[in-house]
Image: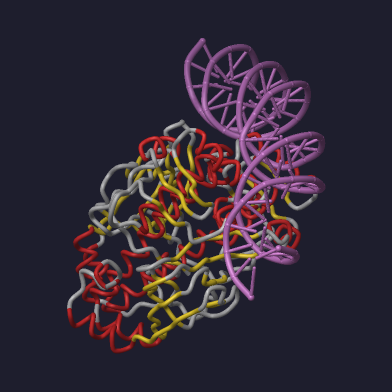
Amino acid sequence: MVRSYSLCSELGDAAISALGSIALDADYEKGAVIFDQNDPFEKTFVVTNGFIRLSRLLANGKRQITGFIGPGDILGGLRQQSTSHCTAEAISDVQACAFRRGDLLRVLHDHPDLCIRLLFAATDEIEAQYEQITLLGRKMAGQRLAAFLLTMQRRWRRDEHPESALPLPMGRVDIADYLGLTVESVSRAFHEIKDKGYIRLPKPSVVELRNLPGLYQLAEMEDMPAPRVSMGL
Amino acid sequence: MVRSYSLCSELGDAAISALGSIALDADYEKGAVIFDQNDPFEKTFVVTNGFIRLSRLLANGKRQITGFIGPGDILGGLRQQSTSHCTAEAISDVQACAFRRGDLLRVLHDHPDLCIRLLFAATDEIEAQYEQITLLGRKMAGQRLAAFLLTMQRRWRRDEHPESALPLPMGRVDIADYLGLTVESVSRAFHEIKDKGYIRLPKPSVVELRNLPGLYQLAEMEDMPAPRVSMGL
DNA sequence: CGGGATGTTGAGGCAAGTCAATCTAAGTGG
DNA sequence: CCACTTAGATTGACTTGCCTCAACATCCCG
């Protein structure tokens, strides 16, 4: 199912079956630590279900979340000597395929198409991070939240009606640490764009985006319509 | 010369000569626009000399600099349909090799080692951006500047004495737009760490880092000692 | 039906932004 | 070689958006 929109799409049968032959199952319960800030990379994952939080802890106790990984996304780097510098934790029950570093490198070597596909995913991710850098460097709380909600929408609602309920798998603290704000500021930002009529909040963990053009304008975000495989490490 | 530390290092002769056969010369004068925010990607560059600024302009007139590209670094993506969303400008006279998209893809297809090498460069870049995201999301002005100076140091001083004069090819406005601050805040941050005795400023465009451990501690940065090829797009 | 975790609201402080003036350095032409 | 110009950098006074701290509300789960 996931195959249709993730890494495997646009790939030849040979590459897919080669990948299949080295794939391992990897499941994690909500709250499980998948790898830690200083672990070396051992595996690369393709998530089929659930959400993962990538975060870094600073010396002063502050935390920065560098990304959220969901169904269809890729998690984990390849280069051996480098450690992740991020902690990956399951924020809901997670199902994923895992590929051992050596296995994956061998398959990449034999299947240039797959390697190029991965390279594209990586450069797309760099592009997406420019967006996040711009958000953190130059936008105010309300804009950051609007941009965040729109990104959530675009990444995990490929289907149906765009203004229906959108579940947020992460809590306010996570949103705050992702957007470079405090929980309180996030809460106030929700209030702000709710007052403008841009969103509804049936529950704290569910938003309905009721005015997409308004949100886009507030967020000063360019439309990036192409669905994208996100990559985290 | 650049070959020794850039993309080509660790590569086999076959891949190097294949790259050589499709390489074009590309030189730009200081101030030249190499590509613009909405151009499609046509070429990938490897810089041999000079510095490039990557920036995005927001609707409200604010600017975010997403990176600086210097000798040995790679500039430009590969995926055709995506446009850069960044403007690349030469901030000093620049010499580079250029590779046409189609040519490069063909060579990548035939030389898995090169493709994997590029993939590594891309994942390293993602990693480096996590650092920048952490900086923008969770650090104060002084820390940001300290981190910036240390990164400059690490990226373009592979040689000699680490506390000698380090030239800054970019002006204060660029540093501000890179660090998510205003010029005035950058100026005050310079003053702040100069007062602490961490740096000397013989000229505004030259710093001497006189207390590396102090700067590292202030910046709350982990040592990332491995020299790295940076990638921008 | 508690009780801990999570989310919201309010009051006050502070780091960085804004606006404005001054200083410095690098040209440029007489 | 020096006055003049100009872009870049610094400094100061004031404002503001977000953080901090604290109280309160709500959700969730046994």
